[in-house]
Length: 278
Ligand SMILES: Nc1nc2c(ncn2[C@@H]2O[C@H](COP(=O)(O)OP(=O)(O)OP(=O)(O)O)[C@@H](O)[C@H]2O)c(=O)[nH]1
Ligand SMILES: [Mg+2]
Ligand SMILES: [Zn+2]
Image 1 (cartoon, rainbow, N blue to C red):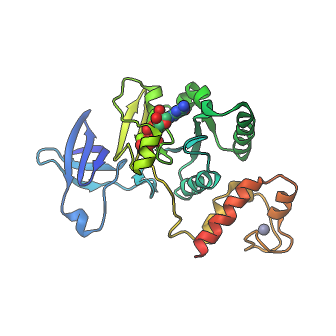
Image 2: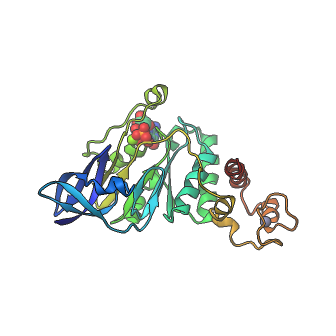
Image 3: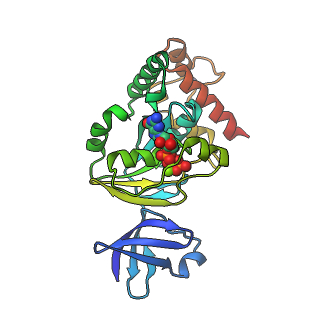
């Protein structure tokens, strides 16, 4: 028996890193009965002779979309162009990460494709997210990003074609990771990356995942959505259960009017609330 960590999963086949070896294993029947699915990131006990995963150790955290666990950071890759910047999608990813108790880190890709005027807007965007307290990086700060993520397990999330695999390749060009022309990927409606796998990239454990085209908030409550906006938390409204929409003496809405809370973030919040109400 050996202790290891699941680093790759394709349907029911798992690769476990144990004793510096990659061992292909299948879960023992018990998991299915218990409705437990091993995830990439899981620490486990394996039977290395028969190549079984015998036991999963308790998880520190678990992200639902994409399905991974025990990660230190969620690196949200957001494309500024093709696919075009989508504030709601980014804000949903941030909330989902926070609701799984994984600190989000933001990376903006394809800034090089922006016009001069678009770049000006991008700088404001970057500042806005930084001011809320999120670490923000882009192609110009990849070195700083690597320093920040050293020795951590980092799951990459983001839309199909956002540039998740490309970012790993930029950091470690020698890794054999598939990337695709965005036009091809989007037109076929297919993902280039089709499975979840952890790569050791110069001391960072990057977990590349298949992208998504949309994200739903199934299973979350309005209260949880409200709590997933860190910039709202410092305000005390008249009503303790204030949802910051139509209530009187709402400190969040007052901050919004003063421009302290960002309008685009608040729009995302309203859309997310109405999505979970349905
Ligand atoms: N100009 C430019 N192109 C980029 C940048 N990042 C990624 N791309 C291109 O965008 C396309 C999609 O990149 P991928 O890395 O495959 O995207 P992905 O997020 O891994 O996509 P999935 O695996 O489908 O989820 C590729 O053609 C990349 O070359 C960037 O910063 N600038
Ligand atoms: Mg990819
Ligand atoms: Zn309020």
